Image (cartoon, rainbow, N blue to C red):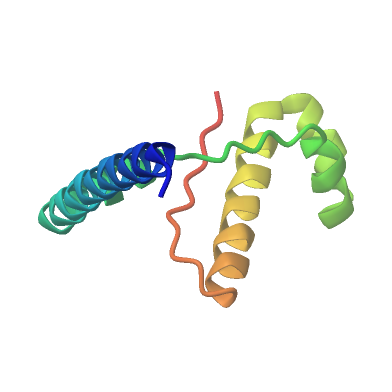
Length: 112
């Protein structure tokens, strides 16, 4: 048997042991992370609850006129009132449609 075969086999054995140790360390780290997630599921929910979707209606008066033909005249006198009504109705409709899809959501509307 050639002396190089012994050297190559020794090197392969050392490399295999090094890889095995790295896998053991990764497995321990994974177990630690899993335990941490199981201890603190609330942090995950809190992080997800910070996500938001904003909707700006660009044509509130047009939408109001479709629903109520006199809304155009009212919009000239009280534009914020029409905008509030359109946003309130949109929020109600959006909440209803989300609930139908099984989405648990809080739908809130704001008008400046």
